[in-house]
Image (cartoon, rainbow, N blue to C red; front, side):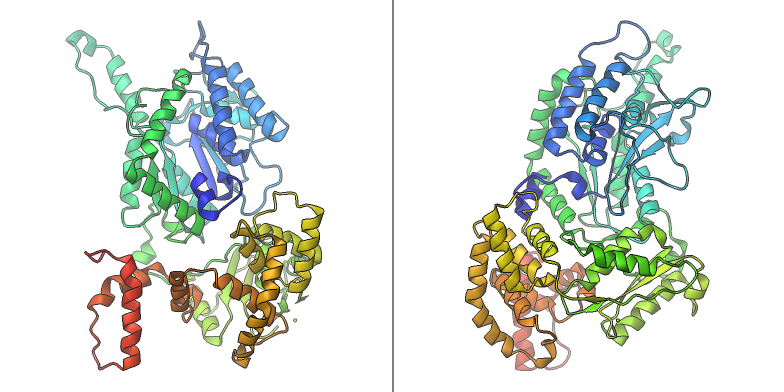
Length: 609
């Protein structure tokens, strides 16, 4: 998270739940997963809380009974952490008010009476239709997953005679990643996975059956010890995952301290300083540091790479036989800085959700950059569970509409009548349609102020009355226009020493130059009266780019943004140096190819890698 803070130039350390859609764990890992995911605690507070829990729970062993430590102490310590985070020590594991897009938390435990094929019970922070786990409190969930026989007695959930008894999922499912990926496929069947992060508890010692005398061969103790070690060897799963993702790049990230903590157990509370030292040494390794940098970039960019339907390793028969099916563009999430427009959102929701038996049509129209697409995406996010399907169509041109509909028909294998084959509600989003009828124009002043602060990454700060007045004056200059406000906020957020007052001064200074440049643009792009304002704020952002970034922007501006992939650049960087045109080329074409060679030369080494 510290690297994410530096990458995005944030004033404060971000929270993991803001960047991960699913956080899961088992045993002590589940405690940390719940603190970071379900309780939305910051990393530094999570570390302190876990250290205090370890000290409270593991500092005194039991003298008799099953397990080495007291479950009551564990439950009390967990209750204090949960109360500090939520105000209620008996906060339920299920979210009280679930919302679409929130970080989901999974905790794994094994049934004491049925450990068949290592199939764990999953405690979730959200509702599911099938195979739901017990509904209980967060601390009961964590007591269940911490019930390792060497540490605690088994933990019962529910009222007799229908209570269930659980033990730590380490016994058969120490690394639950395979189950997490299966759950991700169920949760997001139409989405793509950008990254998978697996954090281990340190490399295990070498597993072996010890040599013994003939007499000791009669006793099952050595075999039992070895089998327990095998069950706890999460590296086996890690190796399987590495093989599964070996053909992908920068998707699967495994972090696991390789030396020094092999023999430190969950009860090694007095050795936490030793764990900290070995972890710091591990993260300083060049290879590990580079891996963390790539992970940070993957979390930030959220580039869709692996289809969720393939993430669990299931063979897709249709794809294997007929070849790669066209990818249906999933409906994107609204912008992270989307703010306000509640009245308009409720209007759209009431329009499209008012009936389940008739077709409902809602058209959002307004100036370019007013926020039409973002409002539509926000409505979809809020009503997502209402729809069987959400179809996102680029309606920029007739060709883009036909192409998208064709891809949907082929991928869904529905022939000519996709709509006729559906009896459940579904919603279709046409983006940038040519014919429009809910008008969207300038933002509400309060919404515009909230958007400015959010885009500038200052929503957590309390602005002074003077700063609020300066911001309101700036918003007046921008006409409370959403795209211009977002440009201004982004500029201020990435310029730590520029205040709202300073930005307004720069805006007024550059407006004349921008107006002159805007007047020279083709008439076709001058579509509304806010055009010159947006052009000014855009030009100010553009001039802050490096020459290399400007070159990239010019390079990618002609193709449609949905068709730009990293593979295009990877192939071009490797092959443009050896490219020989089949037919004679003009001076202009030669000049363009030379510029491309110069641009791509920064991305390859002497071996063309």
